[in-house]
Structures are given as C-alpha cells and as structure tokens.
Length: 346
Image (cartoon, rainbow, N blue to C red; front, side, top):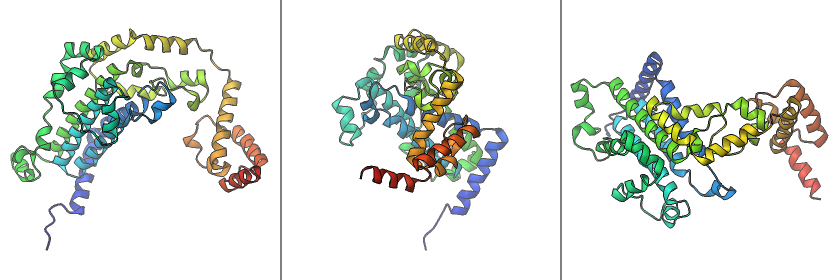
C-alpha cells in the first residue's frame, strides 16, 4: 500500500483556507497586480522591426510569468518548498531577460540558448558586469545597491535543500516552531513582491520607453482603435501603471528622471503629442473598418456573441450596419466565409 501524505482533499482544503485569508486581508489584489506587471513587460519589450516578433527576445519574461503563476498556485495548495523554488526560478529567468537584451538577440550565445543548445549562463562576476554595463542600471545600482540585494536573495536555499528548514520533510518542524500555513503564505507574498519589484526596476531602466504613460482614452483619440496603436514599448495606456506597483517612491523618481532624459522617450512623446486628434466620425469609421476585418475572420454570428473582447465602444447602430454588411458579403458564419472564398478562387 502506497503512503499518500498530501491528499487531494487536504490540498483543496488548504487552497480554500488561503483563499479566505486573501479575501479577509485583501491580498489577492497584490498578487494580480504583480502577475499583470510581469506579463505586461513580456508583451511590451520594444520591437524595432517585424522580425523582432519572432526573435524570442521576450521568451525569458514569458517564462518568468509562467513560473510566478505556478508558484502562486503551489503556495495556495500547500506546496511551500516548491512554491519558493518557482519564485527563485522566476527571478533567475527574469534576470536573463536583461542579460540577453544587453548581449543582443543576434548573438550566437542567445540563439543557441533559446534553442536549448547552450547552458544557461552562471551568475558569475562576468554576468553581473554585463548587467551593470547598462548605464541606467549602473546609475541606479550606485544609489540603491540593487545588484547586492539580488545576490543576497536567499531562496536558493530551497533549491538546494539546505537542511530541514528548507525541505518538504521540514513541514512538521516548521509547525512545531509555530510557522503555520498563513505565515508560509505571507513569507511567499513578501518574496513575490520583492521579485516583481526587482524585475520591474531592471526593465524600466533597461527599456526607458516602458516608462511612457499615455491614458488609454488619449491614445484612442489619436489612433482610433486598439489595433492601430503602434508597438512603441509602452502598452495600451492605463494598464501600464501596474509596472510600478511595488517600487518605492524615491526609487521610482530616479527611474523617471532617467527615462525622461532618454532621447527615444523624448522623441516618442513629442511624436504622439503632435498627432492630431481624430474626429468622432473618423474614430467611428476606424472602429467599423476594424470590426469588418474581425468579422471576416470568424463570421458575424460568432463576432456578435463575443463583442466584449473586441471594443466596448461598439453600439447598436454599428452592430446593425455591420450585420447588413455581413449579409451582403455572405459573412454571417465561418462556413459561409469558407464557401465564399472557395467560389472566389473558382
């Protein structure tokens, strides 16, 4: 008979208790903001050309997000050690995002690492020298000793199982010591927030355009639709405020001062501010044209049942006009669209 120490019932009960604890002390919002921040960074690393979409430059931050999310689920289900290991892994892979961006996505080392033919670089003296070769990071580090803070991060003890206190076996001993599931969660949350903060700081320094803030409404007044907003390293507006959730005010002030003196940031701000604002009619036409393309990809019926994912500004008059257009083009269903395309090809 196999011994099972953690049953499904036990882990489910643990998850529910932590969820209640999060609700009682309003902690889930911090987790969601942290996860959103890392995800947004992964999606907004500045791209200079179409080929950059396929370069894998944002892979490190995508994987960092995956590890952070996995860590969150692990701590809620009661897997304390594993959650800390995933936290440490998220920090390591997040640091690689900075390292590879400085070394260059065209470098042989990066391309071979991305294709799993090259070992992950060891955090050696040379590694940190490469990180600090970025003038913005160097300037910030001189003021706030960020690199030393990263080096002293203690979660590697869980990775290497430094005795009982950092083991799965040590769960019973931690309980005897008085460390319950809620203290475990609080320790996890503290480390989670620190890791998100460190990665936010490094990426805001490495990519100054991530600091540009235009409201979503302002960007839409200039470009009309979300799809029309160019990828200039600053997201879609209000959502990007997540990127500084856990950064202290004095550190954020220095980051903004550095970014505001960056030539590319100055140029982008000037370009967008000088763009004329679109009229209501121009914006309406852009929305309609954009939704016609969406309808052509899935059919009117599917499109109309998922309006919330497209654009909240779509009104009943637009829907009626788009329905008439879809009927005239035989675009009501995806089956209709396929048949229409087959006929057009003869």
